Image (cartoon, rainbow, N blue to C red; front, side, top):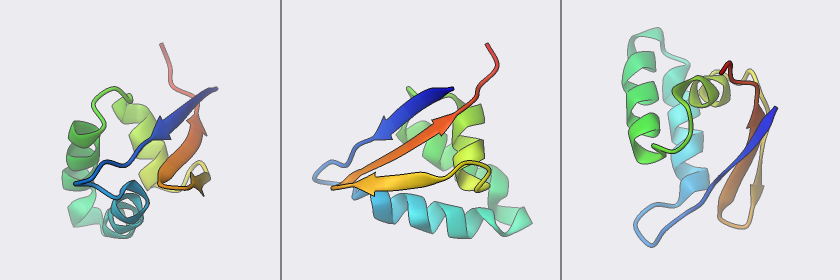
Length: 75
């Protein structure tokens, strides 16, 4: 299992973006768009890991302005 750290920037407050994306991902018609948007924002994280985060398959925690989660991604 790999641990990912999604940091904030002056333009993006990651905990808020992830909370918004998880909420939007709960609507089936928005899932693909949310996955694309978050994957493009955090391009160094595999889409499979982002999908686990957005679908709540894995928990996450907030450390300051950083979102931290672990996901199992096939090679």
